[in-house]
Image (tube, rainbow, N blue to C red; front, side, top):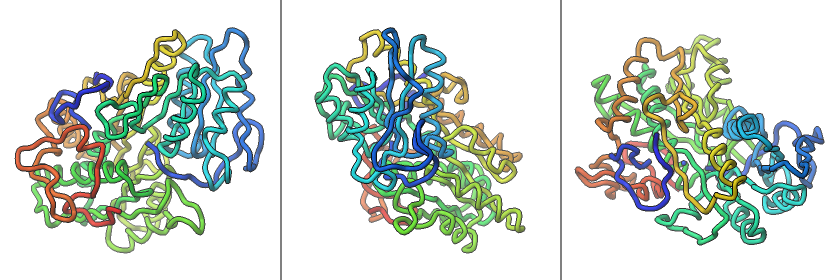
Length: 420
């Protein structure tokens, strides 16, 4: 399995070639964690983890609803796995910590409350919380702080902070997005793929670009079609899911794609509008399909029109981090885990991809693509590749470094959509 990255950059064609989160303010859904059924301006931690003297309590600050069908649910379920696997661990959390649901409440304030209730390790689950995580680590030097995404613990990154009790954990979802893009290319009949994006930053450009690279590779190499006949458009809604009056409505974005001749929509947001709207459109007679994101069970929402879902297995790195922290052995580290190429859908794989029913006979083709990614014979991150403005991303024969992948300043040439 790929090892955690803790320092030196590696070539993208390395066995764990270098290939992600969370930035967005997320809006209202669901109930206040644990205690209340409606949002309130002040956070209330879940009462489910009242620590005894022998308990090791892990607190999590969750940017969106814990049952959002995507990123936040996957993280929440990952911590449920940890509780089952590691004796003596209790889990406490506050979800919907974002300006839409809790104006003027910062992640660091929520962390203070969790620590006051006995948390010894605090996980911040969004890139939105990068400065809250750093502030918490500085304020509480005896508390272990983990930030899911972010790069402050990456010694070879651009933003390294020498904070001994702060770690970053992320998955190499670039692999998953390339698989998803390949599935989209294999599933389209019109050659027009729409990508439902959140807000715009390095990570989201990185993920959308990875999806495009996977689609482009499979379109040209397996379907033997002309590059110019593939249309790949990104529409950014503005946040990780719909905030009425603030973001674009993802429901409308999906339907605009379908009404414009796009027959596959890929989701890059936390919530399941791509699935629900594709299901409705298919029921109305349109030949359309979707690719879910984040959560392993994403195809269950509309299995007959799902091409697949790339997902994170958060239970894997969180179990390792909690065990180390509980034993007093977790020091600052930057962990960026990819698939276990022996079986990408095993419990030992941080990144997986489950093909959907709509792939049909093309499942064998995507299996070939995945095998090539794993053994290095397929590397879409190899030049020549240009950015949207025509400047070089990778020169001919050049393979991307980890830094070139993580810090993605533009979308790639061949993609339609804004880079900023």
